[in-house]
Length: 367
Ligand code: NAD
Image (tube, rainbow, N blue to C red; front, side, top):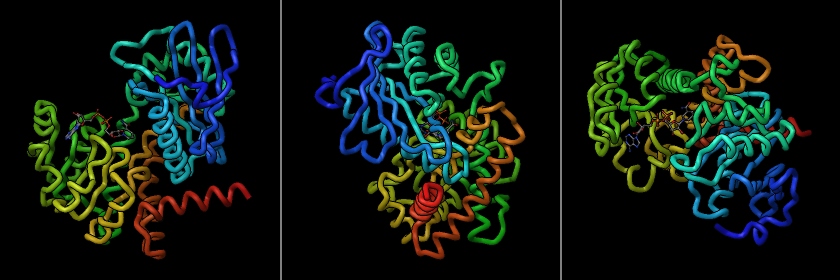
């Protein structure tokens, strides 16, 4: 692990053994606040990035990952926290974008003490960053963090939280498919449409049930064949080998597994009309958005489509309300329509159109 003092600057002890170091590098210049914390007692090392709080305190999950050096952890937290600003702003949430990374292996390095120390770090930022679950974290860990700070979402239902966000994310993906279909064909029915879903995890499972209810023809894949099989049986879909899913001739391709699936290796074999998925960062690079446009494949920007999860947890702040969270998630339909319209008027890809709308909103709000 690199020496933080050579990267970040001078550390200040904020409580016994817990050190705070503001991070100032060229990459952090457009961020409101980036902080590296180190706790001597537990070995906690975490970076919290607050990208933008124009619309409210920053909200975003904590990722626990065995980063091999601080630079990689910093790159990740900067990219993720900026993404959260865009996701919250396009959804018109009164929330900004932030994220935390904990450097460590979530399978072997978790302890109550580590998450208590992390909770003190979140608390030190005075509510400008509100945390939630992300990769490597679970509900129980959030409860431990909550013992040291109130700036936590993603708590269990019995603690006033909203529980698993996946049903909301899936609902957002489902209404996004309908909006995309409506935009191109004038009708938003998915009955009889061929839809290929990559991944048979949490989001995919809830999504598949909505699609089954509407009479779509489903094609399902997962690298764990048992998961694909279970879901396919449950919703009456066909199991597809993961290697062939992306090139299937379907109406809609729905990546609900990993990011970066639309890349130089896969783009030429695509045979779908729409890409609408729950995964984050579906496009490997921005250029792939233009390439999809050139191929007349309508790409619904992932951060618009999969905002149901953050919409849901943002509803925990000030008292959770399930109906309000659901109504706002269904609003993704209209948000996506606005993005498609803006893209058409300005001859942009939907991805760039979404970015442009967010950036204008931020500029207008800062005037
Ligand atoms: P999950 O871990 O429950 O499911 C992902 C599934 O994808 C797993 O079953 C895994 O085996 C499978 N998979 C991995 N690589 C694959 C491949 N190459 N081909 C086929 N299947 C593959 O995760 P999830 O919570 O359902 O999240 C899915 C995606 O949606 C992730 O990218 C996540 O970041 C994103 N997302 C989730 C939420 C949420 O509320 N859960 C919110 C926003 C974004």
